[in-house]
Structures are given as structure tokens and as C-alpha cells.
Amino acid sequence: MKKIMVAFAFVQTLLTQAIAQELPKASIVLAAKSKNVTIHTLVAPDDMFANTSHVIELPHELIVVDGQFFAPYAWQLKAFTDSLKKPVTRFYISHDHPDHYIGFGDAFPNAEVYALEETKTGIEKTGLETLKQRQEQFGAIIAKTLKTPTHVQQEGKETIDGVTFLFEKSTDNEAAVSLIIKIPEVKAYIAQDIAYNKIHLFISGSTLGWRKALQQIKNESQYTLILPGHGKPTDRSVIDEDLKYLDVVDKILATTNTKAAYKSKMLAAYPNYGGVHLIDIYLGFYLKNNWQD
Ligand SMILES: [Zn+2]
Image 1 (cartoon, rainbow, N blue to C red):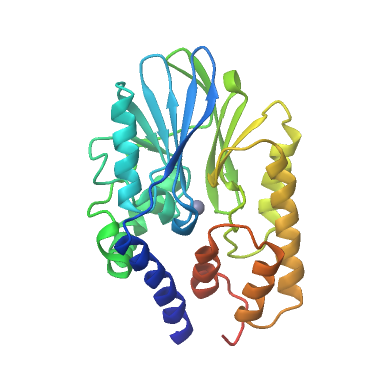
Image 2 (cartoon, helix red, strand yellow):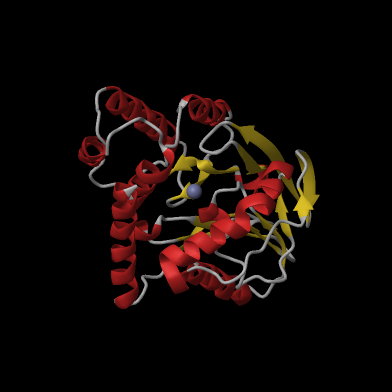
């Protein structure tokens, strides 16, 4: 327990420093552009977990995928969607991990929020408690209000504003259940946390199902634009990079018996990856490995 507090104190210190020096801004990148679809991706800074929100700009409306962890980035997202002068008609939450849904409640109070049934239920069950915990841990950079999903997204094909979307459920990957959104017109595969782009992957148990989900993307070679849940939009090279990362994780887990040793080996293997605090958080709270520290 003490170590958990240390891990969190460490993250908090860094965040407090970041805030004192004025919070670094998220970057917004143009991920895709075709006749009817433009995708803009907002990516939080590496030190702030590099969470993504994708703004899918259609002829008359905007669709947003994922709502950030820290409220200031959701506000930046709101300023950006306002600047496009089209209404946000659907706000998707890809899965029920807090870094994807607790940020946007204040900035998008009237959003129509869509998620898979399991995700909706999960957030209804634990969302408020999670929000409160994070408010206590991180203070003012956490949103004051929680916005829960109001619409269940079914799997299948849908045409929105003249553009074809494919919605799929993926299970047992980085999360127990997650939503995949594909947009064939721009060859885009919105993988969210099945893919991390040069950000430390969040490990909370067996990597087997996660590998399967990556393998599935590998089988669908028509999608050349991969949109991760953490890190910038990228190409298909991220699939093998992430598969290899999981190999490294499993190898290090098999040969290590303390959290400190595990972390230092991961940092040595991936010295340039962002999101180092993610390792502290999953070692402190999620990855059960019967380690002493
Ligand atoms: Zn995440």
C-alpha cells in the first residue's frame, strides 16, 4: 500500500510541476482527409498519458471519439470542435477506462454519448466513484461532472451524413470490451487502446487477448491509417511494434521479481517511449504479480 502511495505521489508531483509551469497543450494533427471525411486527432502531451480524441469531420456534422482524462484537454477539444463550426452529433466512448471518459463532462455537458452496452453499464456502475477518486488524487485538472453514455451503439454498418461507418466489438484486449470504428472512405481503423503509438502500453494482466486484437488489425490490410488511444495517428507499422512490445513485457515479467526491476528494464528497452507514469499506475494498482514491492 505504501508503495502504491509512493507511485501516485510521484505522478502527482510531476503533474503539479507541469501545472505550475502552465499545463502543456495537447497537439492537434490532421490524420486523414478525403471528399467527405476529415479526421483531426487531439493528442495530450506524453507526460499526461498522451490520450487521443478523434474529431471526425463530416459534411455537416462532427463525431468525436473519446473524452480525455484531464479536463483541460477536453476543454481544448471543445475549443477545437467549436472552431470547425459544425455540431457534434455523437460523442463516442471506446471503453470504460477512466482516461477515456472522465475528462469531458464539463466541456460537453449536452453531448449525445454513444458506447457499447457493456461500456455504458460499466461507466454507470463505477464512473462516479472513479471520478471522485481522481478528483482527490489530481485536484482541479479533473472534471467536476461525469457524463455517462446515453445511447447504445450496436455492432454493424451505419451511414452517417453520407459516410459509411463500421462498428465492431472487441473483447479481452487492453480492456475487457472495446469499440472499434472503421471508416473505409479514409482507410481508417480507430483502434483506440488496442494500439499505442510509442507510448508505454498499459499492462494489467495476460497479453494473449490483446495480441489477438492486434492480429485482427493485421489481417485487415485495407486499413492503412491506424488511430491509437494513446499517441499520434500512425500507419500499420504500429501493429508489429505493439506485438513486439508485448513480447518484451512477457519476457521481462518472466525473469523479474520486483516492480522496480521490471520498470527499469522496460525503460531500458524503450528509452524514448512516452507515458512513463502509466507504468507506475499499472504497477501500483492493476498488474497483480505477487511482487513484494
Ligand atoms: Zn487508455
